[in-house]
Amino acid sequence: MLQRVFAASCLALGLASMTGCAVNRAEGHLMADADLSKVKTLYVVHNDADKHDIDKDLKTAFEKRGFVVTNGPAQPTPYAQDAVVTYIDKWMWDITMYLLELQVTVRNPSNSFPLATADSLHTSLSRKSPAEMADEAAASIVAAKH
Amino acid sequence: MNFSSMFRPAALAAVCVTAAFVAGCASPSKPENMVPVAAIAGQHKASTSVTVAGGKDTDSMGKSQISNDAFQQAIVQSIEKNKTFSSVVKGAGGDYQLSVTVVNMDQPSFGFSFTVKMEAAWSLKKADGTVVMQEIVKSEGTAGATEAFAGVERLRLANEYAARNNIAAALEKIGKLNF
Image: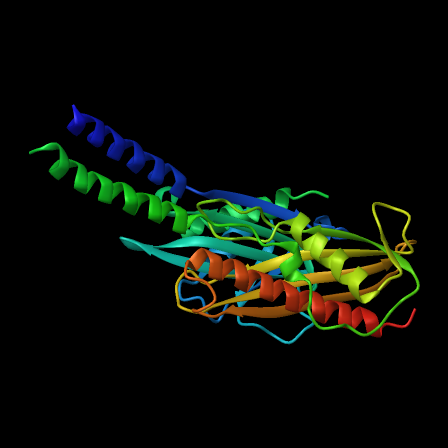
């Protein structure tokens, strides 16, 4: 009897701990005065610390939404495009490496002041590919409202 | 197998699981810990409102975060402490509108000492909408290995230090404005 109670307790705790680990977030925020409807062209700045070419995934994600997108290294301001996209990618190891969080910021091409931000976070049990998270972040930015 | 020999590993497992859960619970950043300690020069006779966006709520199984409410309270307390503005009003009606957006928080996942890098966008406008200041403020905060045993606690402290430094830098810039 005690063995069954112990086994059931272990199973319950195991399930509870696994459920708790599945944290997901997909948020977008538009700055008070920002109007992304005027933005047609974007420049995605490659993050020097990024070893997975997330800028290419973001380029694809924004192109899918009708923007004309260029990607590459950081350049002196002002950029020729209507807005600049920067990002921070956080990776985690759990059996294999996976993208834990992608923070994306759309900025004014002249002074880098933020226009919109997005955050895509998926922990191990609900992990997504970098392309999917880039797509999710781009979708959050496009959908963000005041 | 008798009762005591079976109970011992069960008790040990329960203790381990409980310890793991307690150690792993993240707590949100506290406003009072984000108020700059040193005095910040520059006082204006006008009043202002303060709005904050871009913060995140803390998930108990995730990382410690800074919520909009906590960051706003910290900014209000900092303004009142340093008299950067004569008063802070709620909602509309102030001479100025201070809007702060947490743009990103670069938080570590492992390590003994944790360093958090924070970027916030500070915008100050007159009541009529004229922009007085638009600044990106970047700051860092490091919590040493001896400051807290649990990693989640060290991360909370590092968040608070980064936010405190961010507020101090921004209020210093605002204090130097002429209006």
